[in-house]
Amino acid sequence: MALHQRASSTTLNQALAQRATVDPERAFLLSGAGRTTFGEVDSRAESMAAALHGLGVEAGDRIALLLPPCPEFAVSMFAAAKLGAVIVPLNPRLPAPELQYLLRHSEAVAAVTIESFEDVDYLQLFEALFPQLPELQYLVTVGEEDLWYDDRIFQYEDLMSAGQGRDYPAPSPAEPDPADDVMALVYTSGTTGKPKGVLLTHGNLVRVAASAVERLGIRPDDRVVGLSALFHVFGLGQGILGSLLSGSTLVLDTSSDGPATLDLVEKHRATVQYGTPTLYETQLLEQGARPRDLGSLRLALVSGAQVPTGLPARIETATGATVVLGYSVTETGALVSVTPPGASEAVRHFTVGTPLEGVEVRIVPDASVPDPEPGLEAEAGDLPSESVGEIGVRGVGVMQGYYRQPRLTSRSLDPDGFFLTGDLGMLDEEGHLHLVGRHREVIIRAGHNVHPREVENRLGMHPAVLDVAVVGLPDAILGETICACVVPVEGAIVTEDELREWCRATLADHRVPDIVRLFDAFPMTGTGKVRRVEVARLLRESVRVDT
Image 1 (cartoon, rainbow, N blue to C red):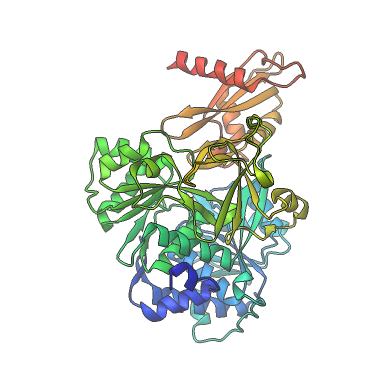
Image 2: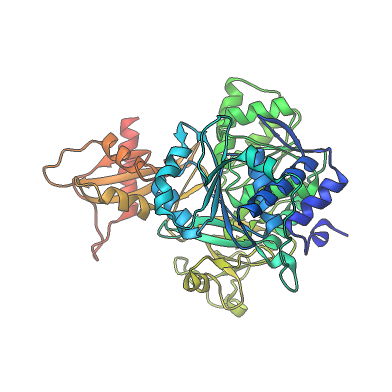
């Protein structure tokens, strides 16, 4: 029986128990803390589940995880699964106002956080957040310092020790399929940049991960690198669960830069790498400057953003690995499609392959795409092959909905149950999916979606700013850079650096403009809207002059 069939009704806790029974001593995670086996993750998750139950955490409660890639993330994730709780993985690099919003919106009753990370003191941060978060009852801190804690704050190791040997009630399974229980609430951004909570079940995550590792041919002897963010759906599904289901080893990486990942490949003799185009571009530059031994790599998956023409071939030349491309969407449980390693070079380098087992893709008309030629109208709303339109996805990975947003959920699904991704694509005559772009305004910077309106709203609050337009410009490394064009208030004195710092106070680093340019006025349309295309052209000319 194929892996995706065996995993069809499997929950996360069942998958871990099965692997820990079969391969208890096999390495699951490699990190700065050393080697962690499947058996150790299972036993530690048992202890943490018992300890959390002792605090009153129950099935259906939400547990926030604010952790960089570390074994404690995986242990906490599986502990929640054993209790029937829901994890809320959050980016620890987010600014305090956004973390407060997400913790409040998710109604998390407990949070597991790193004590300090990248010069941020999270104990101090939560001390300020606690009064604003009435639902948050407990904080579990991961760190080495022997600090004083009150009755709501517990050190991770102490709590796990307290749970050793203790029992806890197993959650009541969903009927008829336990895999239908919600496992994760993963936040992503909408067309306005506002966070949306994506509800994903055990089945969404496990079934997609099983189909993906089967398509890619991930083996027990593989060592996987390149995942520096476990709070993304790709890190949860393809990363943690992909390694669990295949029996492979996941090398945890707290840095997202190319040189650090190259060092991990060389140190651990990694065989598989996952990454965004930006990560691979920086690696190619670094490899040219200071080569590493990458002879162990056999497979490189590129996903997360539009792949520049020629990048797959350059990766293969530099590493000797076979390059495949994938298409991943949060609302579909991670990968929708991926090219198999055995496909032709034309398929692997220029398409994102065919849909995974249990996944369907359709191309439907989009308002931003011209109507199909007369006589080529598709049946049931689908466009014919070789036609560009919006990508719709239906199948095992599609979310249960957006948390507390039923109207938005209904607008995101068509009458046939296909999730409308907002991405433009095309299916060729062989059924391979080609990514074309997006029909919604979005800048993809280093694999992160950045919505212009969110940055514009922040800049518009500055007293010296009269008008603002944010556009994306092509960049060889980042994919796109964020460029803010600002018309100052008459008589105002403001600098570009000052406006960038203004953004940094409330926006995550990947949303802060890379470039700020001051304009006297913007070109406008006849209806009074900014001509963004013309602004982008003027900005390109400005950048060329500066360089």
